[in-house]
Image: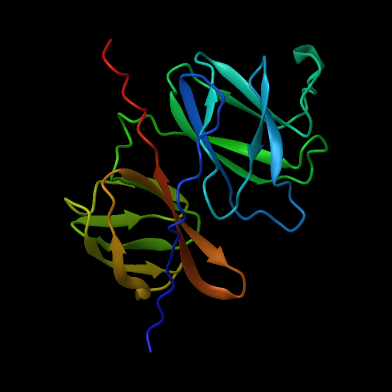
Length: 232
């Protein structure tokens, strides 16, 4: 029997954080180990806000100031900006980045906060509603058909896939992988997924402990539209 391992999470979008600012961010702590922090404080150079670090979903939407920034993760908010420990996990934001994902991973060597951060620029002009951002975090080649679109990913790579369907409907998914040194493809996922043309989707191909077949993890990113202002 062929084995298909797919995990497409359809958790509802969480409420938007109340902080203000033109730059938006959502966070995921992929592969968080037991005992990892579930919340930390994100410091933007002037102010800090408590943020969630979910491992199987995207965080609420957080807002940050515009301009070039160095952001840090802290266990507690600092009394003064100059008191922030320079050894805290840090990531830089270019002025051009208006929307990003913050991929958090474990870093036990950091004694301030046991994490490290990677900024993924997802400005809406480059990553549109209905599209998928794929990360192949394995040593395998991964590819196949996603509705009307093809996927072909080398090991340790990422790619944006255009909308796999033209409207909100089921579409066919048929993906395979090839292990390093192998000649034949192995089945990864054959099913149907539901397309939402109002949501972007973050997709990961990851390794499973004790199983050579990779796993697919999908995280939907739906943003509520801002309410329209009433005419005076």
